[in-house]
Amino acid sequence: MKPKTPQQVFDLYDEYCHGYMDRRSFMNKLTTYAVGGVTMAALLESVMPDYASAQEVAEDDNRIVSQRITYPSPKGAGTMGGLYVRPATVAGKLPGIVVIHENRGLNPYVEDVARRAALGGYQVLAPDALYPLGGYPGNDDDGRSMQRKRDPNKMFEDFVAAVRYLQSREDSTGKVGCVGFCYGGGVSNLLAARLPDLAAAVPFYGRVPPLDEVANIRAPLMIHYAGLDKRINDGWPGYEEALRQHGKNYVMYMYDGVNHGFHNYSTGRYDAKAAALAWDRTMGFFKEHLG
Image 1 (cartoon, rainbow, N blue to C red):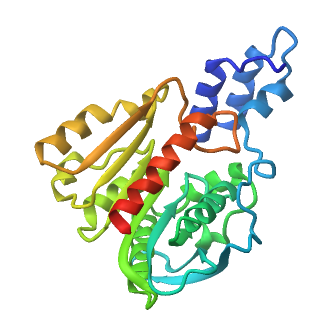
Image 2 (cartoon, one colour):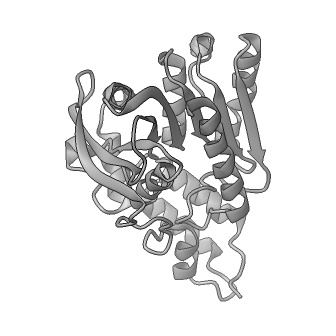
C-alpha cells in the first residue's frame, strides 16, 4: 500500500505549477518530505501528470470524429489552432462547447476532456493557446513557460474567437457554452462577463472576473471549487456577493477535502468521486442550457 501523500506536497506542487516557485525551489523543498522510506521518486510520482495511463476516450474511438483545425482570431493570434471533435453518428446541427485548458497549453488531459464532451452530443473545440508558438511542446514544464510568453489579452481573444467560430459554423445551432480548468476556469468566468450571447459557462477552480464586470454576465454559471484550494477560494465571497447583488443565474459546488485540479485524472490531486460528480453535473447543466 502506497503511503499517503502529505497535503503540504500538494500545496508545494500547486505553487510550482502556477508559477509561484521555480523547479529548483520546488525540488529542494520536496526533499524535506522524502523521509521514512518515502523517496523523491515516489513523491514526484504522486503529483506529476501521467497522461498515458489517464486517457478515458481514445483518439481513434469510433464514436467520435476529431481533427486538428485552424480558425481566425483577428484580435488575438490572427490564426489559432486546436482540436475539434464531434459525435460520429449524430446528423444535423449541434450546439457547441469550448474546452479551455490550464496554464500549460492543450495537453493530453484537456484533449481527452474534449473527446468526453463530444460524446455528450456536442461539437467541441479545444484551442491551444500555444499554437502561435508551435503548439503544446509535449510536457507541462515547457508548456507553462511558453504560455507565460503570450500576451494575456490576445490569448483571451483567441478563446473569444473559438466561441465565435463554433457559433458561426453551418452545422451549429448557435448555442455555445464553455468549460475551463484552472487558468481556463478564469477564462470561462471572463467569457461570461464579456460575451452576452454565451449560452452557459462552467469554470472549474478558476479566478473570478473583475467584480465590476459581473453585472454584464448573461450566461448561467455552474462553478466548481475544491475545498482545499485556499488560493482560488479566497475570491469566492466577493464574487458570490456580486452575483447575488445583480441577480445572476448561478450555482456553486464546493467539493470538500479535495485539491485544486481534482478533475485532472492524470495527477495525484485527482479525486475520482468528486471528479465524476462534477462532470455529471457539468454535462447535465449543458444539456439544460445548450440542448
